[in-house]
Image (cartoon, rainbow, N blue to C red; front, side, top):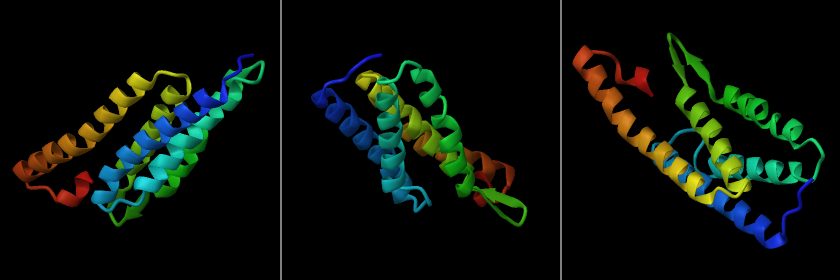
Length: 145
């Protein structure tokens, strides 16, 4: 069992909130369902559950429930629209935000920041690459959302 100081708790929680908000900002700009608030809350909630778990003798049992919980939220973001499925990237981004919150909670703040930068970069760069590939193949750009 491990205890965490109030100052460490606040710092880690604020880092998770800020990095989650950073990830969500990019999603908000693109008008996706899970934007700034959702990603900030997912990262913060994950951080709080991980820090709370450190007070128990079997913290892995609490932490192990974060992924299914986020999966449940993410499943709500996935919609079928005719032959198209939308929301997969949004759900995956929320899942990644949970990972960022988890890293912040265990004190790996620099790794959490690197992870957040990679997630935002992937959403920006890979979206452009996917659109370019779709244009070259004559596909509907809505398919790569």
